[in-house]
Each structure stands twice: as structure tokens, then as C-alpha cells.
Image (cartoon, rainbow over all chains, first blue to last red; front, side):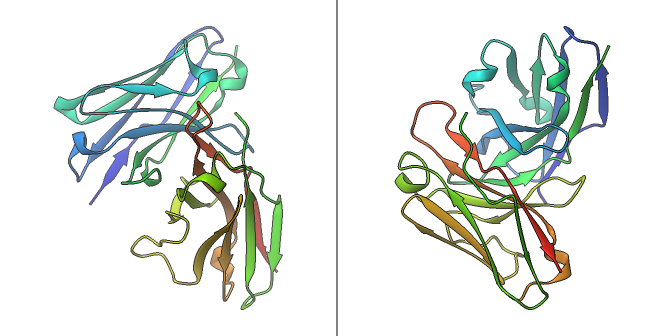
Length: 118
Length: 112
């Protein structure tokens, strides 16, 4: 069965960077785009961007351009999202989500909590 | 990015039907049939409930249905059950430049 596994939580200081991973299994890794979505405490969902695991192509939301980087390692079917120059308002749960055939997210990781605090 | 507009809360008694609206523009909901809905329990990841406006993934109860009229999409939950109490988010593809995906503001469903 399809699984997206993310690991735990990270605490970072303002200005630092964080790299969140998402291990995919149960399907053809290169066949589906992977997206990242975040949710600040008590807030709604915010789309960050996607990566094509086959080609490595990416597309980021405009307000994340310049400080988010998405990569993948096909040998271990894992995608990564790195955020730099962290601020306190980047404190959120970060989810990876697989895109189905037509612009919807059919499987989600369990989320990774990133806390930015001095 | 401009979020799609949803009511903050909707409530109903067990057995009743409720409808959650999701209002966008002609660039997103009105211009495409790529509306999806997600259910989220506290502390859990979202779960896909509806895709392509009115399609249910395998395993999702047929009490959940979706529709669209103009720039507004709707999620209807019929035969409301206690387990339906959760947050619900709509999402649409948009052609109005970046970002290409926009979420709704979210609706808290309360079963009375």
C-alpha cells in the first residue's frame, strides 16, 4: 500500500535552515509528483510547491521562492524540502502529499513539526 | 496567495445533511473541474474525500458528495454522524499564475 513516512520534529533557531524528508513506498516513485503543504498552529493549509521525482523539476509558490528547495533521491525513494532563513512564523507542521492523476492530493505523510524559536 | 472562502463553522444533528461551500473565482473553481475536498482530524494529516468536483476515492463513504455551480463548490455530508466532526478544506487548481493550487480557509464541522 502507498505510504509516505515523515520523521518527527525539529527545533531550530531563527535564521537557521531545516531539511524535512518524506520516504515513499508502495508505488512507482517516479510516476507521481510530490507536493509540500504546511499548516501553522491553529491555521489552515498552505501550498508550498511540488517536485517531479522523475526529472527533479520543481515549482514553488511565489512567497516561498528563494528560500525553499525541493530535491529527491530516487535510490531511496525519498523527497526533501529545505527551508532556509527560518523565522518564528515558519513554525508549522510540514506535510508531503502525493498528487493523484488530476490536481488532487491522494496520499499524505503524517507531517513533521518544525518549531522555530530562539 | 488568496485562499478560497469557506464558512468558519457548520453544525448539524446526527442524521441531518449539511453543506459546506467553497467560493473562488473564474480562474480557479469556475474555470476548472479540479476541485478536491479534505477531512482533517486534530493532530492528523488531511484525508482526500472528494476529487474532480464529485468523485469519491475508494473507501470514502457515499454520504459524502461534491458539486459545483459557477465559482462555488460544495461538499454535502448526508446522514451526519459523530465521526464526521472534523475540519474540512477545499482545494482547487488555478490558472491565475502562481501558486497553481489554492486551499480554502477551512470549515469546522460540529455534530450537535
